Every structure is written in C-alpha cells, then in structure tokens.
Image 1 (spheres, rainbow, N blue to C red):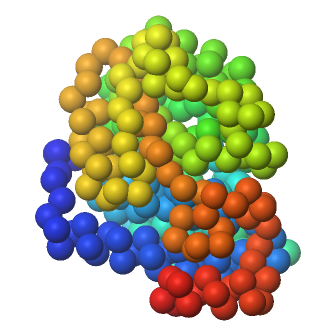
Image 2 (image 1 turned 90 degrees about the vertical axis):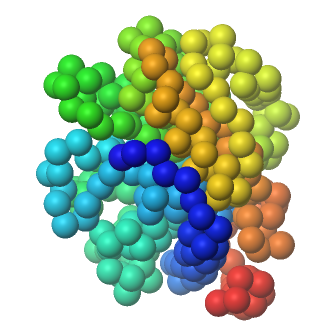
Image 3 (image 1 turned 60 degrees about the vertical axis):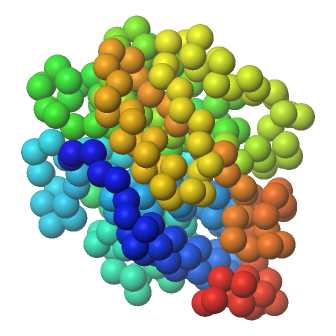
Length: 278
C-alpha cells in the first residue's frame, strides 16, 4: 500500500470509530463479567489506524495476494481486537455481545479454530514476536510483498523469548516486520518499572539492531506517520514504542491497574458510557 497521509477529516473519523470501539469494549466486558478492558482501551487507537488505514487486507478475500499479516500478541486485549475486526468487516457487530460466552467464537483469547480470518491464536504472552519472525521470513523467501505487524504489551516483553526473537529479527534483517509496543506502563501486578524494569526501552531495541520510533499511541496522526515511516526502512526490523494510558477514555479506569483484568459493574458501566457518549 502506498504511503498515506491523513487529512483532518479522516483523523476525526478514525477518532470517532475508536470512541465507538471503546464503547464496545466496556459493554463486552460488562456483559461477560470478565475480560481485560484496561489494555484494550490503551490499544484501540493503534488498532483503528492499523486495520482501517494501513494494512492491506480484505475480509471478502482472505487469500488476497500480498495480504498483510497481524499478530495480536497481547491476546488478553481481545475485546479491542474483536471490536476493530467488527469495524473492518470480519465480525457482525451483533456478535460482539457474545464475548466470552460458552460456545461463542469470541473467546477470552483469540482462537483461530473459531476465527479462521485471524493469523494465529494468541494469549501465551511473549511468544508473538517469534511467530512474527517466522511469518516475515517466510513471506520474504516466497517473494510475497506483504508486511507483518505485531502488537505487544509492555509486560510481556519481560519474557526472555522476546529478546531472543529480537536478536533473530535483526540478524535476518526482517525489514518487512513492524512491532508495535503498547507502552502503558502497567501489568497485572502493577507498574512495569517496579516489577521488572524495562527502561531505557528505546536504547535496548536499538542495541538489538532495530529501527525505533517513539510516539504518542493515542495520536492518530502520529500513529499513521510512524507506520508510514517504517515502510521506508531497509535492512532492519522496526518497532514503534507507543506511549499509551491504560484504560484510556474512561476516567476511573485510566492508569488504574485494577482494570487490567476486571470488568466494570453496572454502575461503572453507566459512568463509562456517560463519559464515552455511549
């Protein structure tokens, strides 16, 4: 896909879609009585730009030559994933409310046996980048002009496998690979820097041979510009470190680790929808 700059009207449209997805997220988790709203709300602006403006894909043609691949490595943020897949035409909107219900295809973690249009099942944290390497390498060997995008959480990059994969991606010069890090600073047990410090993150990825871009992960224009920029990088993989706010968009969920894996109750849903205009 050629480089694309967003006009103000497009930016506002994407912001509106992200707002609607946030409404989906709080409703889905409330209805299920479980799920992970915090990391879903932090990631939805990234997913909105990626799926609706950047990636080459077609829900009506899954065998599209050159189709870009996507790995939702932080699979617990499935409400965000399902919501944007719905907006992109893969999942009927009325199915979202079945999230985490017995027999539903929308399980707590994305499952390819139920959803054949997703590239991999995910949920085992720390494994996505290794799979992304294999996909990117395989596509290049086959001469397929597709890119591989992966969304990771910051807690999961404490896994050693991530850094082994980071070394391999640089070694094989996988410039068709773009990792995006949802850097919201919180994991299930608290602040990432208190549990297992990650900083200086940008320097670490650079030392591993990656092209590194740091952005505001809620700024639609910045997200798009970063995704455009990585397409011009040759001979090395890229990572976009997207600084985000866990629970973004709902005041009492923002930077509140309690909502990493807790659904809103009835009153919290009411307040959240009021703030989101839902």
